[in-house]
Length: 112
Image (cartoon, rainbow, N blue to C red; front, top):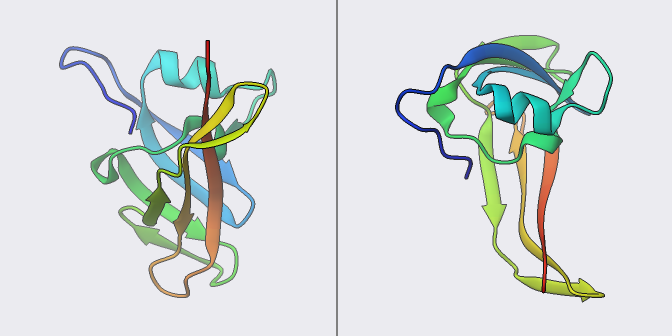
């Protein structure tokens, strides 16, 4: 999970996923690391955030916006994928009403 220092400024941003979007508070560093050089920020690039940092989400399948966070499911497979790359965590954000996947994310580490 992405941790935040006590004094760090958070700014609410819209983060896109394949099945909808969320509004969540991000640090400037999180925003920079999730940016792909386009105006949009993608939820999959941010990874797992604490549910308290979400204000609302929109589900494409329901066609509705809901308060709070989508459901966050994740696992820690620590699976070696080859050439020293390890899949540390994989997860998804899902709609609380219809179970539609809002976004998938993956976190990798490179073995030294």
